[in-house]
Length: 301
Image (cartoon, rainbow, N blue to C red; front, side, top):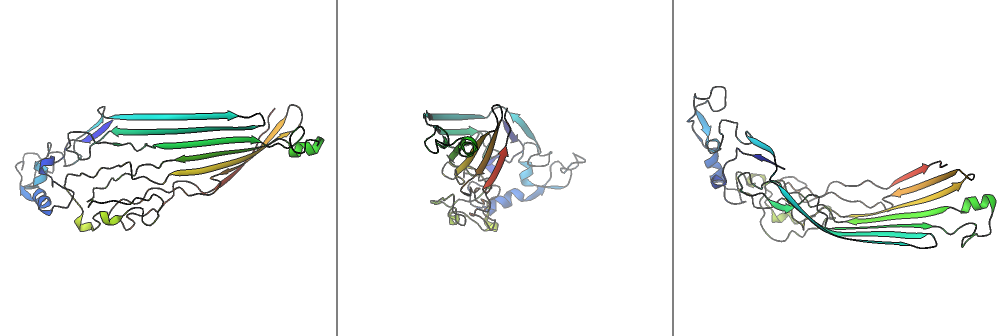
């Protein structure tokens, strides 16, 4: 679904590049005689003068940009392709594992890079994650009566050593594409992108960073999303240990200890992408929680 501003200045009147064009800005902001003077009482078009750019809009009587919008147009589209592999194996001695891998591409066209563009912008979707791998494993520890270790124990000692289960889930996934929402001047060259480099995620010298030189009233060409520029990938391990306590024949008491993000690995958000922000090109926040322990006790009957 597309939401679009219809009260834009046509592209032909905008600066024709990503470098700041002061002459074009001056031309558009020049104050001229208002041809609508006294014709529209109660509006901002009733005065004696007006900025020239407002006369270039389709609906100059409606407060400039965003004065006229159309919401929820069903003219966008998306494409999703995926290859998926699953492998599962159960062994007779209490060991089992399951693995899933997917390779995919998710693209979309839901808005326009410039309000005056005739075509929707076709780009990588925000939800695109080209690689995802998940491994889960479970192992009933071979302790207790009839098992490989402590097989001769009985009674209370068997209740202590028997019924232990070890579980783990490993997940790795490509990071989300970052969103260059700010209009900026890209000077060209390799960004040397490093999604886990906190202080130099990319080469900031490839962009104009002086506030006074930022582009304005121009046709933007630098896409908002690129498949090569992504936030840090997920690389996480969860571990749990379960003790199934047999109270009597009908009653069991499973006790769980879980370590989420067991190795306390930080998954970082994307870097600051506003070229005039002092943290431009730096990562300042995390996307996940630190290691968390959970304990659970449940009565089953």
